[in-house]
Length: 159
Ligand code: PNS
Image (cartoon, rainbow, N blue to C red; front, side, top):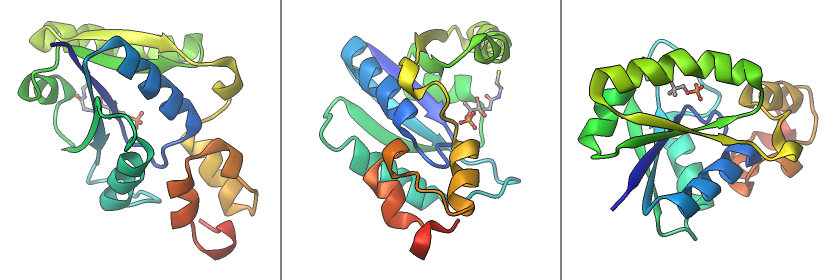
């Protein structure tokens, strides 16, 4: 039984995340989407909302579960979850340079491996930060995010 963890803050989940997690579900028997919360950070969507959006989005994929991760060490979380692999999506070489030291650190901490999935080209420009900015300025982000995100945006799409 292979189990992978897809970690992130998902504030909000967007279609690039969804695509990578869906592909991960084709590679591993079980995929745990780990929704992190750094308690010193302010989020646009609170933990319960981020969990609910992910659960709704992946409801049709039985191999995918969604759990809160808090602000602990990812490598320890993976050990607790009995997951031998972390899956991360890559949009660019810059993402890889950012991720590589963490992948090495996580492996040296507990032996958990990191598998990178290159993002689909049509999603490479997406980031949660950019989408929040567009939405806060009145832009329509419906084509870039799951319906659950749109359902939880304020009236008129204001963030
Ligand atoms: O979506 P994000 O905010 O880029 O997700 C970042 C996340 C949750 C993957 C990252 O913050 C993380 O790994 N947090 C766990 C803390 C940890 O283990 N730090 C040491 C990394 S080597």
